[in-house]
Length: 288
Image 1 (spheres, one colour):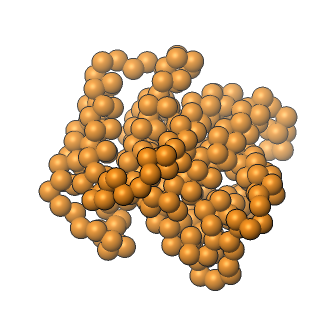
Image 2 (tube, rainbow, N blue to C red):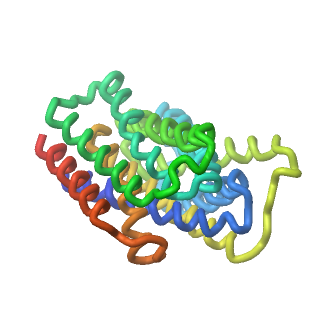
């Protein structure tokens, strides 16, 4: 069970790392907040096309539906908007370093309110993983200080919302263990939330151009949906304290994709050390 949970969590992290790259390319066509709307709308559209074949309509009348909707307002409602602003202002790399702290926001409420257990070995494993994740990004970042520290609020809010969304989703899945339905409700609530916020914006701040950039954002939305479906499947099988640290390996995947696919950067010794630490922490956590 743990192996499947870990595999699904890593699949989510890999998918989200690709989403970040797609979003960066898509921002040539739109501003960050409009990009978030395009991504989430594409995500919602894909899942509503599949919904008639995969859900029972009476599920909408359950308490779990409300919980999943609340999770959607957090992730990707708040999280995606601030995430896109962060990618726009800071780029995928520095956005990723703050995302390394998502487990802190996820695990604390899971232990306090869901009754999940985290022993000393598990805490050590998570700590080693987080250090490795942060080192993987610092090894890639060479211009620290070339931005206003205030901008770090964007990825910080995104990380907090993304972390809190995991225990909320886990609670809903204990009531109704249906990952696809959970994902559908989550993205629907997020799309309504982001759309409502978008309507209140000053038209002068909106940038929208038809072109190849939009296709990257649509692709990002579809891939984001698959990532969330994998996340909810992992949460349905395992605890937040197991899932959250592996979800936080997104920065490592960003580095790997940069090196092998997008050719933005090369893997150096520091990356190897960081990845080794993250792997060691994972082994400690799994065997707790």
